[in-house]
Image 1 (tube, rainbow, N blue to C red):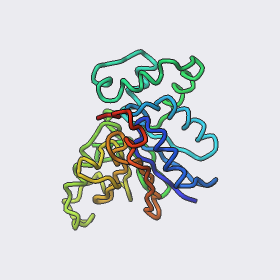
Image 2 (spheres, helix red, strand yellow):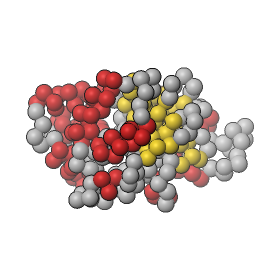
Image 3 (cartoon, one colour):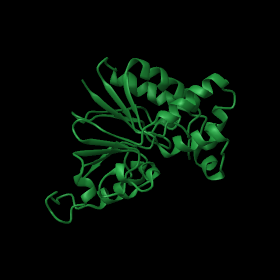
Length: 241
């Protein structure tokens, strides 16, 4: 039985299908998707349709990303703010232009059922971005911070890697969980295209929305599978660049 965590997809369905073929899903696998399923490459509605069908065959946990919330607001209320449109929203808007009302309702249900975070039986946290409350994400005063916050990742990157959890200077937030798996902030900002691990935080966003690949990690063995750089699978598109 494997627990497999998947980074930000951003409409790159071809990359998702490619990396899943490498993973070779098994009946007893659990897949935890870290959010941002849309806003980037052209296969946005198609990605959601694929995930809905995939979850009928395999055990899946779908985390809510900030782009998923923005896309939901567009589909539900017609909210097409310029900030969203300029950061991948245009591709989602175009992808959903010809969708049937029945499919739209199914996709709305998918977005509505997304969870803000998940903690597994081994006290590993899965969240799109991070959290600020010293008592954990369940105590956030503003719940949407869990899919917008970057300070947890910034803190992990800046932490002295030799610092023990017993040290008073060790961040209290990081002591709450055995491991924390996040997306949201591409590791390509640090010049990398593989999942990065600082303190007990694993960042699985390897820049699929831009020039990087889509990544899947086995949380027990730390084996990594990656697609080709996603832009090569969509040669006529710019993604979120």
